[in-house]
Length: 61
Image 1 (cartoon, rainbow, N blue to C red):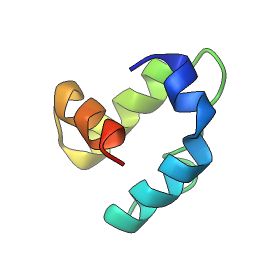
Image 2 (image 1 turned 90 degrees about the vertical axis):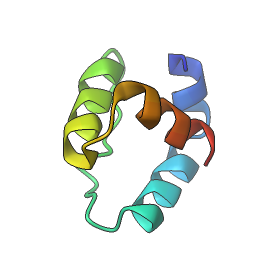
Image 3 (image 1 turned 45 degrees about the vertical axis):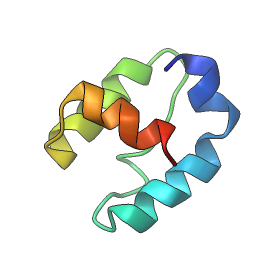
């Protein structure tokens, strides 16, 4: 997954992630330019998933 894939429809993906994982907050899902890896790392920890599984979850949204 690259930055363009995340940026392109992040608001839509963010909403779907919040529906699937109700405990995620806006701060957990805040995407800032140049900080994609940091955000994904936080999500990985919060969800208790491997990075590979996290990428798969986001891609399937």
